[in-house]
Image (cartoon, rainbow, N blue to C red; front, side, top):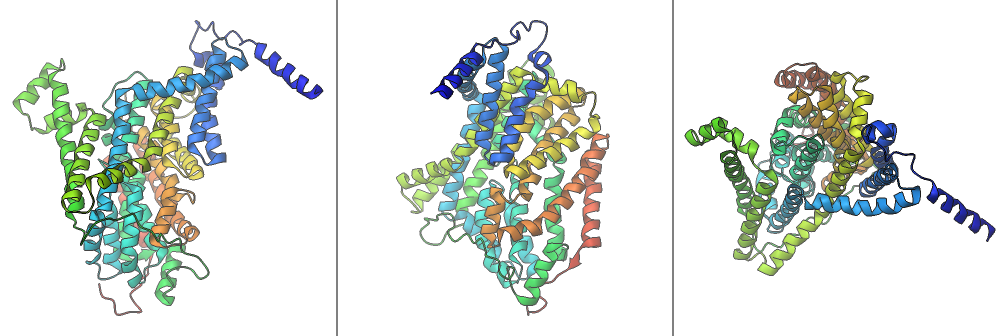
Length: 574
């Protein structure tokens, strides 16, 4: 009883401790008053992400710590700060959802999830994969077709792992390609392509983060246009896709992957002796009746792309015509389909609305096709569509929390403090590299690229803007470094969902997949840093840098790689 009284007394005393007159902060911003305290929300989110491996919990507690600090700085005592801080979380979430742009992004992500489910259930994606698989005649063509399938299923990394793996596994086994190699090709064409695809389940998330980060520094930009500008700076994604093609076409391997391929060639053991395969026995549900048709996938996906482009043009054109830019209006009216008009129209369009509309139209087309062909009833199709949306619900949750964390950090002035802290100590030329490496570390430890992007993007763009406010390319490069570093870490992590799904889809042992893939991922990451971000940050043209980095990757493959032809001990001909 005595101990309980002591605890009650301590809590009461703490609750009476006033805030150290931070409310009278007319002399400066919260950043200038609180200093390093403004770093607590992102640090809490990052530290807990490392410890708990749970991004949702980490982001939530990061927001909570920020709202408590904000209340305490406003004059509340500690107990009041905790209570009022919790209610503030709800307000931040409601504010995020009330924003039309944010709402459009979430709806777009969910609807694309429903579209993917309809296409998969109708057997369209499998039909395309099987048609290409019949073209495989040897280890080279098998690997290149697997790579091509990964590019074809660009719209979602999960769909990539769950569709390409089960389809290509029997063909790959016939060519004695190790399961580790198959898992690597699948994994290397999952997130790397989905992250830079013009339309995918990733695009809404990435565009949303970019938009929010620019708003935090008082700039309204076309976030989709900025996303497009980041693509040349996504060195890891581009070079990894190139690396897969080179090693597949030349059959050159090095490191643990070389040993795995030699084992498969010499002993026909597709997985290491004593290792268990993470086989995905149950593929995505297919309810198609009869022989699935490739048109069940091509028509809806084609509609998604077509109506997106039409929407970008019409929505952007309307925005330009209602603006006060007389010169641009005349250009649009006089040359409605010129390159300048198309570029400006796409740049002025509202991507959140356009992609949502296009995904909805494509979903309706996929639903109608499935009903007409007898694959499912209208009611069953709706159930499939809704179930597909549910699979991406976590994306919406992370988005809202990431936006809320960004709002808290904006109110506290976290970016302002970092600018004052790093602006005079970190050379601007090193910022993209530091962002890339930090993103890789966080993503590797947490196994998620989404959460890493949500934590770093609100910091990267304000920092880059403060360091080089007149250099738009530098800001775009820094945004690209966030997105790319997160994908590298996720690609390398043994607890990443795409890493696990790739191993399962290929029937590979998870740890063997990570062990053989990691040297390749690190190699491309080092090339991305030393022959990508560093020279570009020093002012070298990005396309010259890409050409140089490509040559370096080719040299690495031919200098360190040794040819391992798994068909040598059989009568397989390419």
